[in-house]
Image 1 (cartoon, rainbow over the protein chains, first blue to last red):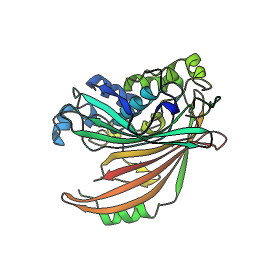
Image 2 (spheres, helix red, strand yellow):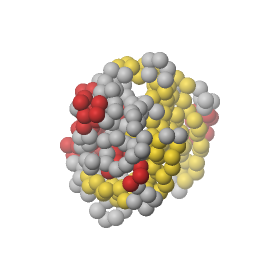
Image 3 (cartoon, rainbow over the protein chains, first blue to last red):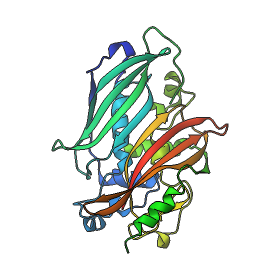
Image 4 (cartoon, rainbow over the protein chains, first blue to last red):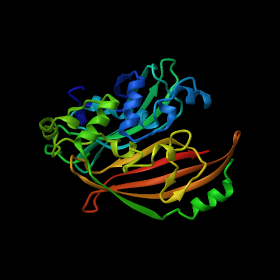
Length: 151
Length: 167
């Protein structure tokens, strides 16, 4: 995790520090367990073959979690995630190398807080887009203190 | 056996706008920390009360997608009651979806307040929209659900619109 950025330090075009994730079978098992997801597609390779996939699949929500981690790691300890969305475009498998990156697309001051909108993307080792995402984060403003509420 | 897509579309459409509520109860730091560990996201705000307070939170907080990633909050069915693919029979917002496979296509979340250890959460689910589509591999439904997560005073903590493809 970085020390983070303040609102005044970012401008449209600024890059989100890339985050590389390498999902494993153990990771998928634990994510299924903690989300109470018993679908075989995430742990039963023979079943995944019956659906035409080469191996078990990374969970839809785990793609979203990777993108959230990337943007909050970049934004740092005072950032708050306000809005986030993602879409599942392509499956990913254990052993894939998934790189989450992005850039700032807009900044605005809303009341007393600084809002930063980012476009995100998760691509596999072949450059294929697995999940695009969009985030709005609240960042501390250098001139405003006491920005202490939120998710 | 292939579902009767027109009938299914009609029965889901009748539920658009209706909502169901379920009390999830107090959130547990151990549970949302396990979630964070499974993701591989060790942000101190999820684990370290002191670090979380320094970041302006009242204590450790749940990862943003914890609530919207958990598929079941109750004990769930016995193994022999699961479908052959391992999933539970789909009942969404009170709508039975027998014989249908749902795939998550993504979420849009809005976060208003942090979810902390002990936050008592109630989930309100409604069907936002349903469309019957005709694709190359046959008919399918696009379902959009709205989930609102409320605390015990009725304050909205977060909301999530999730799109599912039902085949």
